[in-house]
Amino acid sequence: MVCPYTWDVPGGVMAHVRDLSEALIADGHHVSVLAPASDDAPLPYYVTSAGRAVPVPYNGSVARLAFGFLSAGRVRKWLREGFDVLHVHEPAVPSVGLLACWAARGPIVATFHASYQRSRAVSVTAPVLHTALEKITGRIAVSDAARKTLVEHMGGDAVLIPNGVTVSRYADAEPLPGWGPDGGVIGFLGRMDEPRKGLPVLLEAFALIAPERPGLRLLVAGPGDADEVLAKVPAPLRDRVGLLGMVSEEDKARAYHSVDVFCAPNTHGESFGIVLAEAMAAGATVLASDIPAFRKVLGEGQAGALFTTGDAGSLAREAAALLDDPGRRVKLADEARVAVRKYDWSTVARDVVRVYETVTATATGGVEEERRGAVL
Image 1 (cartoon, rainbow, N blue to C red):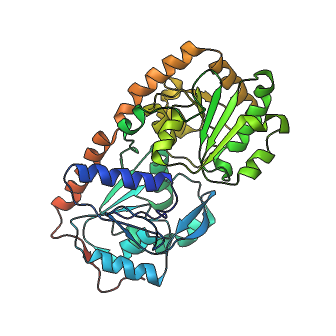
Image 2 (image 1 turned 30 degrees about the vertical axis):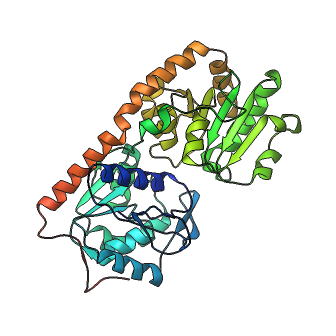
């Protein structure tokens, strides 16, 4: 398994690779993961470092990638372990996944996560990417949006297998100290300094409804500059904003249980929405922007409320309505617990294994290092 983004910083693709790997290991498979990481970073026993990552602007975010001679050498060394199948995530991203595709031959599966519009950069690099992508023998897309991006930008098609969530990890947890669903907490989880995650929209909405609700508080978890966030909040309301910073998996689960409404105000660039699935597994009442990926995960509003993307006024109205209607919150949370079951890794991992079985059934051997003609 190859993760293109650094293991040092939590993210959707990294969490997907981690949880899929652990689900496969639990089912008796041998899994080795290659990912960018600092050499002194604490890594799970199944992860091998491909070298320190560097920050690169990508898809409206800052991706931390590894690409170069050092990483190429580590890719080659790792491939010599010998695998039945190589599973690369986001192979079009200029990182170790792309290097692995170039360096290997044999059964290769790729998972496409991202959703983005056609860009000049993608068009220019398409011929180079093709030399790697043509080696892929099985393709997976985590959502309709990711599948559409693959078809439009790179050609070919993919089987649709959604992101997974370990439902049991989030189902039961105690609220964080000093917090708890009592009719007055809105929550957010994501990178505070990444505009497409939508925190500025939520902060604006909070400023609209908080003055009339003296007990209303906002709980924010995720990396970023706390001072910059508080600067966007009116001074009289700042003591009602809790900024946790980056949290552990345990505290993340507790955070979902600490709020009355979990808000996902993302503006674009999401092909699935793993935070929604996690919040649903925790039984939180979800309020999300109505981007297509979120609409699908929430069943067009059956398992969570929706508001107009980027519209702070719409978010404020929907949040106020939910806070004032405990019965509706309970109904949405119950629907969410049922809807999220189809995303449990116990189901999703089996679907991925079927793809592995398909690509290995017709192969003449396992994954080998490409000793001639590799582009590195």
